[in-house]
Length: 526
Image (cartoon, rainbow, N blue to C red; front, top):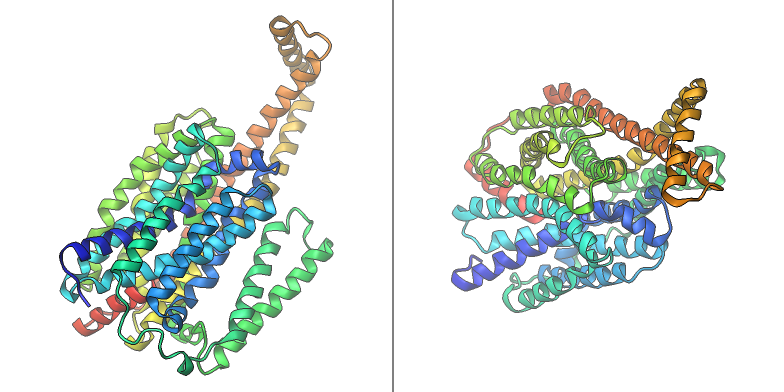
């Protein structure tokens, strides 16, 4: 039911704020990884689990959101999800071990996945059908603002406060949003009153959790544990295979599956999910690798890293409502997708060729290219997912597409961690061999550093050891620098390789009725 006046304004503020809060938390930790790793006594590769755990939770909960909202009632589900997200945020901030923060980040992701999906449905219901492109534009701006504000806000907090505060800031926002939801969001007629007629796909849900969870563990820990030389990796691989095979079989055979995998039999959706997977891989991986590169290698502060992301990405805030308006008029998504993938590949290639002595604003142009690429793929891929589907299958197709995007992101971060580790070892070995071949130069360098240390501290006993330590740090920095550039090149390859598959996408101009059904599906299944 469409609302007017103050009630509509409150709904807009509440839903967009809740969505932005969830999206901020997908990226706010990226600039804090170094501080979190130091505070918890772990390395960067281990602390990246706080990102992966959140992504896995989203992968699991997003395709189930429509079912859960129908079963419990949309307002009730939204309220409980908001409370879960807020409480989990507090417990993340209070965590004093890697295990604890990973667990609570997973719980936070369960609550957050529902916020993003359900917020848009509630927002759309506050507008008349003719005004829903305005709602799409408002929400689209939130989709871009959240990930953009995350690194900047996180950087400011790290610089002036401490890393637990990146989670604590959710508490007042979550409490206020919960109160406003309770008093101003109305229940839909009859929502949550037909539980008896709704069958729950328990087996499919369990298989999904087991399959995705153990697969992610294998991807994250495989390189560090020497893959199948580890009995843990072997067992986890077996459980992942059983879970994924069981999930696929169950969803294709049960009468009312939690995730409608049968829709992938439609060619257009099947190939759209490939594009979506690569888009998710690129988006999540780049936003993980870039902050670590700038802080670990280039010496940026967390706040400088956030600022370098904020300005160019604001381009996407301007572009998203425009593209949303074009999509609502039935413009084909395919040209947008191709151009967006080309721009993202260009961004990755530009990032793979940066100098180690660049300044903060040297990244403006590549990050602006990235922002345009993001704008051109997000909404068009959602619209392309439903081309060729019957209107009744729109929610299932969009939910499946969104799950694949999150899965691509989780896979991308795990892949990046493994690839960086492998490339680091190769580059370090090469650098050390080059140093050994120029032993006389190294001896002179150690001598010069030792003399400098003695002059500065008067400590001649350990000057030689400290000089070698400085050289070792320089080798590590250079090896990581080369590894991160290699990772950007790998992302470029993914984006270029998938573009030819555009010939399998279907272009079809929707009728007015189909456009209205698609908009409704996006609002219910985003």
